Image 1: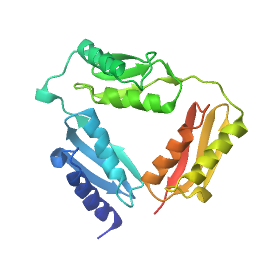
Image 2 (image 1 turned 120 degrees about the horizontal axis):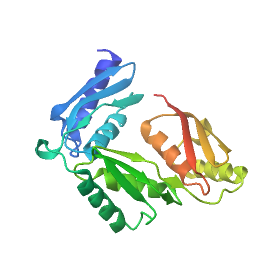
Image 3 (image 1 turned 90 degrees about the vertical axis):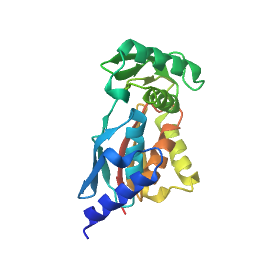
Length: 217
């Protein structure tokens, strides 16, 4: 069997194995290590979980997630109702600052406002993606915090890499420019890539992280 054929079989097995994903309506294909997911799922959260499941498979270099959200009962919800539920959920989550707002157009949620940390943006996006009727979430939230010296940001991220047992820090390079952090190098899995990007986002003063990492097996 070819490498891509093995990937299709292994990704299909992983989707079946994940209880958060209904794989019955998901088709998997692969070409040169890039896995494509097509079909329908019951919600935006499930669409994202399917992509994570595919990324867990050894040998997957990239995932093209073309899954479509199938609304419950085949009928959509009006935008005002979706927005109301999103705002209510954001308000009840203590990790999301009150400065975060949301607008909805044709079922697509756009998050705006300001936060101090990336984890707050991630939390807001996670909350919004769980709302019934949301077809997609665009995160336009800005990070607003004082910018420390570039060297301080770079040193703190490099040290975080070295402390992390899940990372091979020797293969990673960090550079900073006006709050934008660029992480380069090679990692051995998507899980290691996520660890590196997560560590870079945790540095005080970082406003954006550019992922120039390559996953190799």
